Image (cartoon, one colour):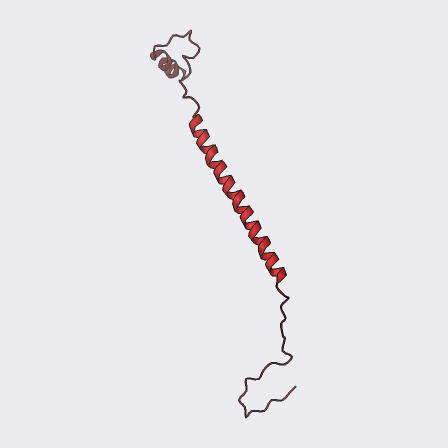
Length: 93
């Protein structure tokens, strides 16, 4: 494996005294990609923050409206209405 690597390095025509000759050339860091990713992240974060603020505002307004309404008065019947025909008699147990 070392022979294959050394033959490839020497085959490129670079001199052995060049320190970068043994390493393959690397592309520059994609700064444009980083800027695009950061911009997308920033926009998404702002959308989430504004959405949370909008939700909190709506929840607060809903709570205020609920407090402004009078308390509900629910009438609970003491006896269950009868579904029997008018001629039938009902006895209590």
